[in-house]
View 1 (cartoon, rainbow, N blue to C red):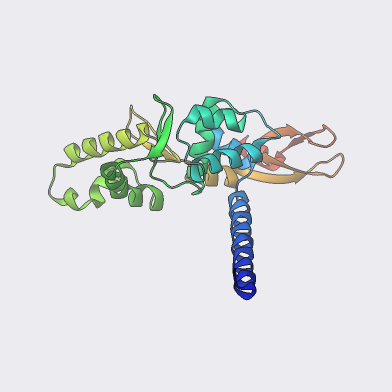
View 2: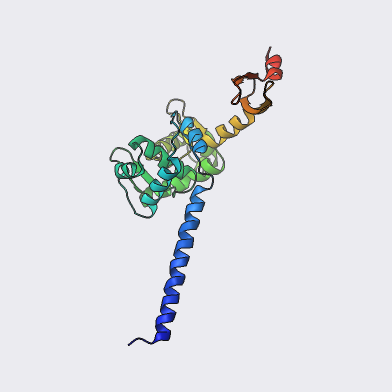
Length: 242
């Protein structure tokens, strides 16, 4: 027969483990919510040319997608989308959004052809590591990356830039680099973080002349007040233009 004291101690330990597990799960849920919101997702989607209708279940969908990958180890994107209650295309965009927000590890590889998300190979990870400093930390263009690479001092610059371009195309096709648009024609890179900063600088707030409500609009533009419908325009900026 078990010693009552030992049984009591065991129950206390189990209770502590359960509480710690619960608190960790709660903390993970809270951390997932930080900087994750539908407006942020809408801006990210718009950067890639997607207009996504607002969805009251957005946060729940994001959580289902996140935990399906992280906790359940699910790799089938169609199954993840079905579980989350969103389309296959929308699910891929939300996965990329989670990667952009650093909620999913950067080495997750999205295979859209086969509908699989998984961790990439060591070789792909090494290739990503080679360029991510220049992309994520410095927002360099291809010629700037070539000039900064160690081999840039000895190799032909034109050939090196072409190699970098092909490497970035490979990584981009696998969705291993995020928050960029790689122009395959002129070989330039558009960065989401830079575009987002530009948009913020172009935004101003003006009080509605009719009801006094504060509205946000682009410089030199006009909108309808969100509250009373009156026309609001950036008059000073328009005068400067004319």
